[in-house]
Image (cartoon, rainbow, N blue to C red; front, side):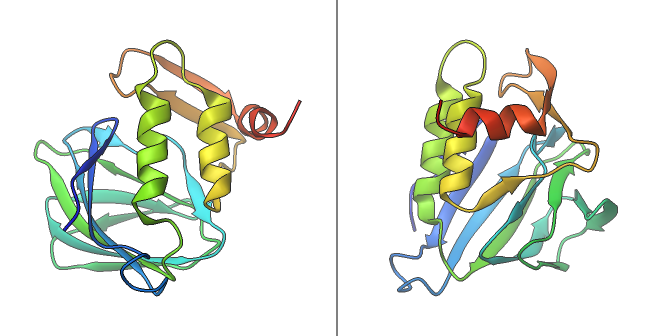
Length: 170
C-alpha cells in the first residue's frame, strides 16, 4: 500500500496503481471528511470509475441527478459522465475507487496537492493544467463552478472559461 496523499481535506491512499497493474487499473481508498464536497464537477475523458461505499454516506451528482451512496453500494461512472460528490453528514465517509484503465496513478493527486498547498489565491492555471494532463475535464451545466479553498476561508465562483483559458498558453 502507498502513503496517503492529502488533497485539501481529502485523503487518498492507493492500494494498486497503474504502475503495478501495467495500466490495467488504479485502485485507491478515498476518505471524505464530514461536511466536505468536491469543488469542481468533472468528467473523465479516457477511463471509467467504479465506487464502492465502505462506511459513511456520500451524495453524488451524476449528470445533474443526485444519488446517495451507502456502505456496501456500488456506483458505476462511465467515462464522459459528469460527476461530483459531497459528504453532508457528521462522520467521515470512506470508499474504494477503481479507475479502468489505470491512467492517473498517485501522480495526479500528488500534483493537485502541490498546487493546492500554495499560499494565496488558487492557482487556476496550475489546477487546470494538472486536470487536463490526466484527462479530467471540468464540467458544469451553468458554466459556473463554486470554488472553496482547502481551508474553507476563500469561497468564490469561477467560470468554466476561467479554468479553460488559464490552461491555454498565453
